[in-house]
Image (cartoon, rainbow over all chains, first blue to last red):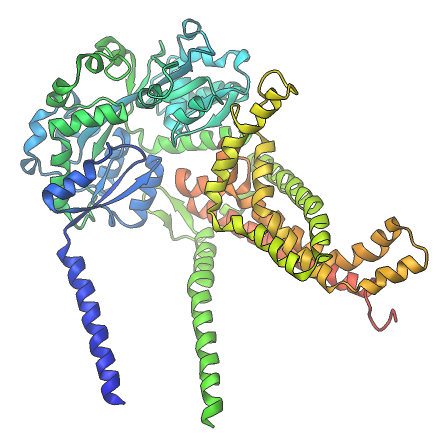
Length: 348
Length: 292
């Protein structure tokens, strides 16, 4: 009887050891990325080359990613890809570890114009992955593209109950703030309130909020006009070339999504290896081709075909970039934005 | 001795397991929600100590009154539609042969093996401007241009009814199964018309099933934020959407928790009403000693 128990115990323990051992033995990196934000096959290639297993998870908004990390005290993930203003916010709150650029041999490929930005001086906490913009999406079969030039055009009463807006407080307020002639990084309550009042007039035109895959409602024919991200248009064009992208005259919202390593990351060295792999010019090239956003990787851009390099939807001219506005952290003012955003979305 | 001790141990084991499970995954999370609901929100640390009831006052702010009213309306319509479809269905089912009943019940439950999110996405495609419904109506010439079905309240109600209908049908079937058929026969013999038999015999006797079904459809309907997100276009239509936004976007966890607790209290209130109504009905129309 006793022997039996001992035997069982021994078997149980050995199984337990085996399991623990295999967990320790397998090198891994836990990546938390936006949905549809990495080319097919890249992860498998990384594992094949380095032997590091990738655990891959996705999110659809900075807020969700931030809430999770905050709740877990920066633990649980080795790589996250926050947008500009979330980099500064998270770094300030001690959620992001320092990046050791010495471990990133491919860092030199990056365009200096997109490094050392105000949201992260000297790139201490972030390495730019892709950049893009939020502008106007249009189905040219249904709406005359010449009739739409500015954000303001979306307020026209004829678009009643038909527009798509992204489900993102900063992007939606960007539109209204710019129409009012203000900075989209405004921290003034009066300006934000004025933008809110303008947006309440837009609400009757809004059919749907979507930040998951905004191209889908365009492709399904449910929406012909509204906000969209440039990369989504590139992806949509593979299925329907009538869907096009317009840079509004008041300026598009421009953002950069960067790799960052949370302070609680358990595999920091593997995380650096992953970032370095993603910075390889050939991987950067495939990223542009697959997800349709611009890469800050100069060597990667050089590998792209001429048509893609000159596609203004992916790589806008200097003039358009200057016309637009980079999103930066608005600090505690985000609560003012959130308050009016809540009021806007519950107003119906 | 031994013969009896082991089932007893087994019973203890089962009870302990169940209680531990419920304690860990039901009681503890709810206590955490209740605790969070009285804490102070804080941007840096999510929640901080001083205990406050301001979060509950916020629930009654006018901007949420609109969402509240809208939720009640949508859930109310959903419940009504479920009842109108579910009642005759349960009646027919109860009158069928046992084999047929099992087969039909099985068919009703089968879709549940597919994740509800996937089924909601399917409805989204069906209701789209280029979806099956619009294509069919255009093909048959009923309409000339596609009608807006997706991203409307209508779409949300379709989704809610689709997901929640079985919850209405199951308690109704139980009610019909318990029904004493001879009472209807008696009604017939005494010359009551079908309408009177329905109003005075069938309806009172199945009332517990109706109320139970309505309750388990009505309350979950208010919380199903993903149905409103996907089919309603992510405009905050239901209380569930407000709560979700508090947790994920605004990060005012105490307020989100207070809203959740408020919904739980609402549910508790309705359950009490159900209990009272049930007692009343059994007293009045049932076969109590007094009535006999």
